[in-house]
Length: 146
Image (cartoon, rainbow, N blue to C red; front, side, top):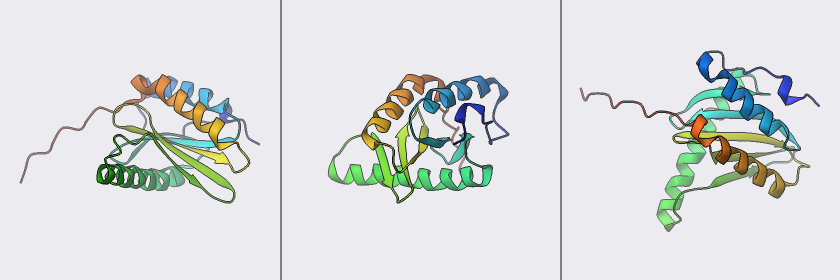
């Protein structure tokens, strides 16, 4: 298995000032057993960082996770569930954990299917909370109406 800490960020247009912060997030999540890759995205659907995932896949994951997060928010609003804490998708060979990681940012982590999901989720959400302040995305200014 590839050591996640040796992988470069596949999102090339990342602000160089953020590179070290994204590397710290990568290294913290690499310590979680079974992590295969991660994508950090802004809630408006732009990948900020991706490790263990090619850029094309990171963009596809970003679009899907952005949609999942939006769907989960709408579902929660419909049942009075409050803020969505995380979403898990379990597949035959992988599991995906999607959780908030700072203001206007979402973290998507791919895990081996053999990974104990409860332990992994606990570590992923703990890491996301610990790095939330650094991983937040500034809100985009509203565009003037035409």
